[in-house]
Length: 439
Ligand code: EPU
Image 1 (cartoon, rainbow, N blue to C red):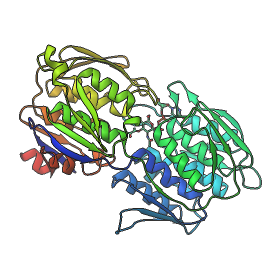
Image 2 (cartoon, rainbow, N blue to C red):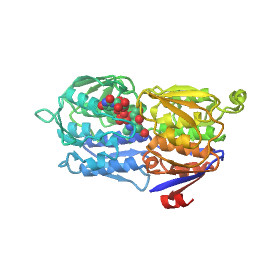
Image 3 (cartoon, rainbow, N blue to C red):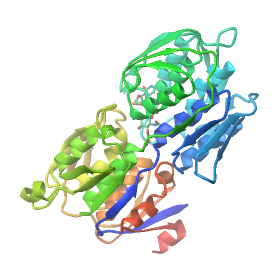
Image 4 (cartoon, rainbow, N blue to C red):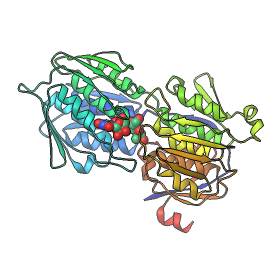
């Protein structure tokens, strides 16, 4: 197991290339199960979650290889006999559940392990099941697996379904039902659909394969089923969460980070809240330039301004940047309140940030953050992907040495984060746990 050793206090400067979006690449790769022919997916980040999905696809008879020439991933169905996605693979990554809709639509049946909960809550899949049932699927839960069958004839039919739940629409639930509907007989209407850019990206990939989808990017999707989908070549959108994380890194360390290829239109809520806190974000050509807004912060003695933030489904402030933003607010000049409306228990990072000198308490689904003047480095434990990113950010600005343990979480969703940070001037090293303990 690896750890990061970070010497804090160095301002980051320079250009960082933003990679392809993990949460778009994963359902897009799952969607290739639907294709009759070869697909080529470009701009797929090098991540552990992508490797895991590759393993699942291969288990399901879909070849999945990365080209040495340009890093694109090629997939092609070679054997349709196995329709079971096993617990061993699905438990590693919930996004694996996205193979359910495509398998059911293309092969008429599927057996996919229930993903189970995770460190930030129960994370049920009832909305996925509700949506697929509305398309005529017969679904049983058996021995920890979802066993799904298309109606007689092996084909789903169109249906009308509302996919909003108690915490808003389901992102991967929308992906599963939309993918299944592309090959169903007739028209499907999904209301309360997730509007995340990653879902719109998946929809555009499906259209490139020959699907008919209207309302892309809106909460009402209309999908008219087609008899078959062809292969397609497609390039994944840039990762808005990686972009937001590096924007915070630039401002937090008092440097200037230029994000290459970030899409500001996917970051409206984030840019709005970060500007409020005192992060200057401006476009310059194809880069977004992120730094401290020194003018705005003058009244606060150069410290960030406190803010109240509530996470919401897109286009609201993303839950996937909640932890990183709390790291930023932990050194603001005043009290901030960050409320989680998507995952009320996604707060494992608070205790670790407090070990670094932050003053944060939890009240129900909110973190109350009393800004402190400085953080100090120590040993901290990463509990999940975005929490790990928050601890790395805190380490970059903390006095002294921070050792972030269990960084395998971060490898799930950030491509070579330590290399990208080091290229901006951070002192960060990946070491094995033994070395981190000795450091
Ligand atoms: N929910 C239900 N029933 C369902 C599905 C979800 O009640 O059937 C609830 C969840 O418990 C949660 C809310 O609805 O409270 C939203 O969950 P959603 O289904 O949208 O989450 P997801 O699709 O499992 C994706 C991302 C997550 C991101 C969330 C919210 C992927 C692969 N994962 O998860 O990304 O946090 O949407 O935006 O797209 C990450 O990248 O770190 C990450 C966790």
